Length: 553
Image (cartoon, rainbow, N blue to C red; front, side, top):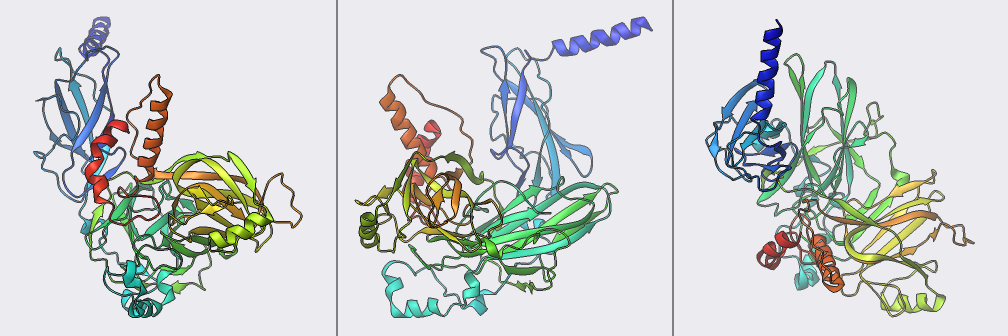
C-alpha cells in the first residue's frame, strides 16, 4: 500500500515537472472578444501566454472544443506546431450551428514542454433565425401608419424645401416617442442556464426583475440599418429566479430614427422604435422554455419625453412608473403592442466591444454669469439663458454626457447645456458644433435623484447649468440643489493594450490629447467628431488612422 502511494505521488511530481516553466494560458478570446461570444459561423480563437522566465515562446498549441448540451468533446486540434495565438482558425472543426460550446487550450514552449490546460471559455454558433426563432418585431406603431418619409435625401438644403417640411410634419408623433415594453414569465424548475438575445432599435436598455442587464450605453452598436442590424447576447442565468419574473425594455431613437426637433445634421428614419427579443431558459431536467417578443407584450410611454442623437434629451422623473420592470406590476392601463415591419438589414451578432462610460471627471472651476453676461449670451447663443445660469469647467474635452445627483421639489426643472468652447461672455457656445443641443431633467421630488441621458451624447468640456444651484451655494429662490455633477466620457470599451510615457512633458501631453480625441470618436463606428457625426462613420478616419490607433491605444 505504501509503495502504491509512493508511486502515485511520484507520477504526480513527474507530471508537474514536464509542464512548461509555470507557463499559464490566459485571456481566451473568440473573434478578439473575451467572455461569452455569439457568432454566425465557426469562430477564430485567441489566447495569451505568460511565463516568469524571459525568452519563453510558444512553439505549438492544442485546442479542445466541447459541446455543452451534448456534454462531450466534439473536436480536438491535436498538437499543432505554430507560434500563432490570435485569430487562430478552427475551420477543420465540424461544429453544428445553433449550439453552445466551451473550449480550452494548452501550449508548448521552445523546449517542447506543454503547459497546463487553460480555464475554459465559451461561445455559441447561432444563425439569426435560430437566435430569434418565433419572435416578432414589436413596438407602438408601424412605419406605414406613422407615414415616415422614405429615402436618405433629407439633409442640408433638401430639408428646407416645402415638400420635405410637409412630409415630416405629417409623421405621427407616436413614431418618435420613447417607450417601455414589458412581459412576465414564470419559472417552476431549477434553472441550468438562461440566455437572452436582444435587438432594440435605435437604442435600448434591457432589464430583468428590475435590474439593468449589462453596463453598455447606446446598445446595440449603430449601423447602416438597410444592410446590417446588430443584436446582443446576454447570459442571464443568475438573474432568472424561481417563481415570477419580469422583462423590461426601454427604447430610444438613436440613429435608427432621426426625426429632428432641435439641431440635426440630417433627418432620416428607418422606422419607429422597435424590439425583437428571445430568451431561452434551460432547466436541469433537460427541458427548456422560450420567451419571445410578440402580441402578448405591452407598452407605455417612458419618462424620456424627447430624445434625438443630435438634439439631446428631456426626462420627466414624475412619469416614472415604479416597478414597471418587476413581476406583479399592474399593467392594466398599458397598451397592446403592434407587430411592426422588420428592418431591411440582416440580423447579425454584435462582435465589436460595446460602448460604455469609461471615465468620469469632476468640476475644476465654477463661474456664475452676471446679469450683463446673461443678457449678452441670450443674443450670441440665440436662446434665452436663465438668470440662474452658471458654467462649470470640467477640465477635459470629451464625448459623452453629464450625470447629476440632485435634490429638489416635484416639478422643478434643470437644464444642462454642454459645449467645447465659451462665448465672449463666458456662456456655453455651440455655434461651431451644432445648436441647440441640451438636456432637461424634471424632478419627481422624492429625495436624492441621480440621472444621466440614455440616448444622446455630445462633445464638450463645459456644462452650463440653469435652474439649480450647487451644494453650498446661496439659494434665495429655493432652486434644486445639485449634490454632485460629473462629465461621463463615453467611448468604445476596446481594451487598452499599451501605454506611452517619456521624459519630455510636451510629448506626454500631446499623446494624452491625441488619445482622448481618438477615443471620443471611437463609438459604434469611427466618427469625424462627437456632434456633427454621421451614422455610417467617416471613411477618412477608417482609412487614415487604424495603424496609428493600434500603436497609440
